[in-house]
Amino acid sequence: MSENKAKISDSLKKKTDPKNFNKNPIKGTKFTIMVSSAKGGVGKSTFAINLTFALQKIGKTVGFLDADIYGPSLPKMIGLNEKPKSDGKFLFPLEKYGAQFMSLGFLVDEKTPMIWRGPMVISAIKTLTEKILWKNLDFLIIDMPPGTGDTQLTFAQDVKIDGTIIVSTPQELALMDVQRGIQMFDKTKIKILGLVDNMSFFTGSDGKKYNIFGEGGVERTAKEFNKKFLGKIPINTKLRESADLGLPLTFKDPDHEISKIFSEIAKKITEDFL
Ligand code: ADP
Image (cartoon, rainbow, N blue to C red; front, side):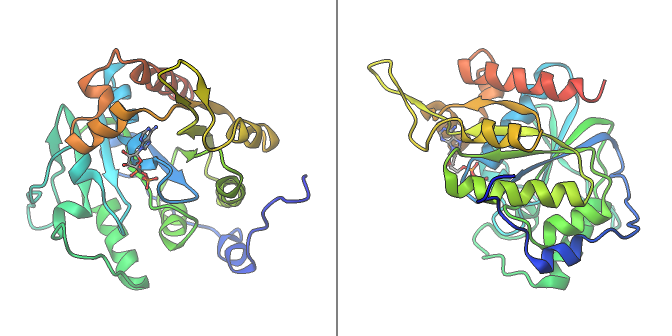
């Protein structure tokens, strides 16, 4: 164990102490996978949406649950903002590009700032996990809010999660928080499917690779904690543009070099569920 390893706080330790949690599976899906990150802005949502279509490309039926309740980005990433239909008891996910979607962003005004307090967070999460009629999914991808707060713990304790992927950029500051995230998932017994290094490097017009946020840190952290390393995603303008246009790259251009990296990651993940 290295000297600078992040210590989880006493309050987090207490909250994650082993108890008998009643974990309910999300109905309508075979496997539920969370996409997590220790920090905001590392590309977690971008990764999650592109993974969704990479899984679809290899023949899976996929749903996407935007649980980033403080900053739902799904409506923009897929260019969809309709109110989901309801039968009075359940909500029907929206469908686009052959996948199924749900986000609190569909339910509240785009410009409404989301100021949630504890009980409201829990009730919003309950709606997202219990009240959505997903249809015959192989995988449900959940885009989690960043960090190790109440939303993560509520999910970890109440929902049957089949695994989580942790997305990080390679800089030291982000990695300290990744270590804390790993410890939280280990304590709550959620299987870590692997770590992803996003914004890993930038290839200049001179063909040279620039390691803007540092090099190799995510892979090293994966090794140190005995977790799988799933791959490196470079900084790429197309990936950003396609997210802004509401047309995820892995859907729009599945043969793009970046989409191929996502395909490899999708294959590695499905191997865990064969
Ligand atoms: P998070 O969900 O972690 O907050 P986002 O997925 O919203 O982060 O990404 C933050 C910003 O970075 C977005 O504008 C997104 O398009 C961009 N982005 C994410 N990953 C990459 C990448 N590999 N290359 C270029 N831009 C990226």
